[in-house]
Image (cartoon, rainbow, N blue to C red; front, side, top):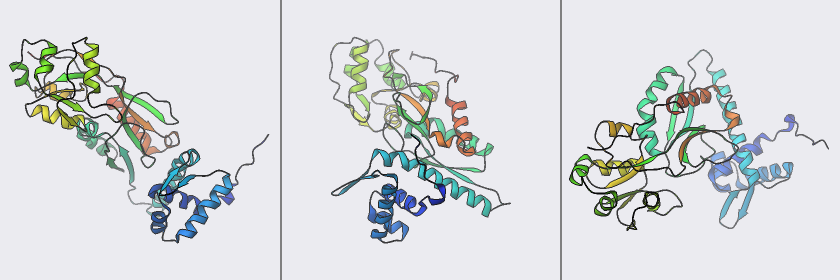
Length: 316
């Protein structure tokens, strides 16, 4: 049976704009204020769109408003479409003047500071028509709908997004070189018992998860994992360790420069692979966008498969 398609001549642009605003602001009141229309008019737009497609876009409950699966499917398409219209109109309006395209890019804080930010200038020099709006939220999982390109710290997942593995995360034990010298000669179990454990928080997992997994893999005797400090990012954990105290379990590839410079050392060769990796995530509809394609290619060339792996170097 053939499905009747919606004729583009009757696309409800005002209703789509109202839908996007409500989804962005999380409320009809905030969206109405942003669009400078009455809340009743905004509500009528959204209801008319829902009637047109025959499904609800929002799950309306007392004091809460959430996108339904249909709304989650529609939102990125609407946002990208309006973005492209905006960019095209700006290019035409400013024909003859240098055109600028702003990419909204999401990266985890530790990845941004240690891997991407130091070399972003290289991308800008080669592509000066592209501006970067970088956001670095804490967390694990898929990016929000309002970013063009994202690097996420995640396990492999099946989604409708295009996902490129930049590198698999291999965790290793690191500490300050003075601490390693002071504790030289101890076996791993005693070393961990006698020193402060530094934890990196991972959403929805116990604070001691990574250390307990390492100890289980290394078949060490049971020990207390609850002690020590907890940081939201590996970057903060490493800064604490570089200050002289504590033992952290972090991605060796991400902090390869600190290891190479001797600011950190690996007192033991034990590693842990929990299945996490840094993934470059892009919406499939965005692959035809020249600016997104340029940035995606640049990231893969710098961080993707084929990049030299960190050589394991133990402390003296």
